Image (cartoon, rainbow, N blue to C red; front, side, top):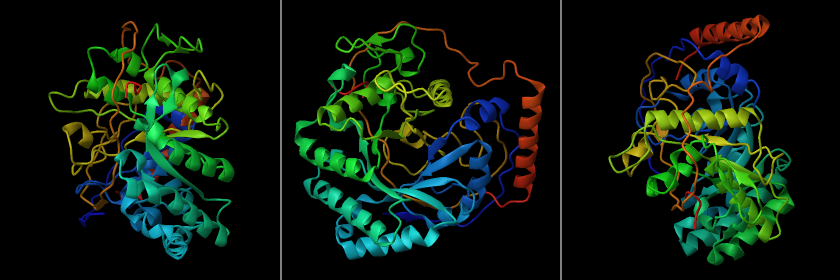
Length: 421
């Protein structure tokens, strides 16, 4: 893993936070955010703490175990998924190495920093690297054994995140099935989750489906704005958006292997606010619609058509734009925020000020999925999903007090596939 380090830190001043964002989303739901650091201009972790807390995110997913971040978030109550780099899987097959890793990167920060899960590798199976893939489950097992030996297995789970390309079939959602060449490995991983009670994580990106085939994929369907949706011809279930369809395709694939009861969670989803000329849909307006409607969905605590009572525990990708990520322009513009702490687009909160550069680590994030067609009718876009309509003065007063307390706290702190075929 390459490390790019910079040392300066300049305060970020929070001016205001949307009251409805606090009341309708942050105060009513448990929000997760991916905190990637493939950049050389990000604010210091100390600066990020008040920003994260002010917009209501209570769970953070890292792609490493950056000690500066874990220390900065001590005693904040924010829950962490920490990551094991893909290149470390081989050595962590060794129980002794795994024990040393857990002691240094997890136990050391407990209980002040609330590490609740370890993601072992990221999208390992879709690298199509047989050696890397063969190290995944043994590393997961060794880390779990280390947690057991340290009496931490009841508070820290072990999992790994998968690209949605682990699916061979995803349309209709009820026909979802894993790739035949991955079934054996995924069965063993799902069996691990079933025995340990840990979640099966997938990274779901409707954006990549639209980008791959914008003439056939309906934009309103991927942005949660379809008025007609799509009906699964097998199950009869109606899907209003691609996100739910992708998730239920994964549910169906798991059920076909006999693991219906294993919990599925969404470790990454998001939309870029900028892209190259050939990257259809990568605009601030579409990013605002996708992430805004996603946050609204999270606030309503809605499951999917196949699992209506399921809490998906979604982690939005990502906190910041990351200027050092390779690939097309979109890869560097998935952030809700710019490095200076201001919103990348209007999403119902308003933060302004400056920030200086800080440090970062490289990670492997995201991944594209090929598309299939979906039908829906265009719907007029709504811009009011994160604006206040009507509310009681009591609620308004409470939220204003929260805003004032947040401002006072900041003044005393250092900142920083449409579905796969």
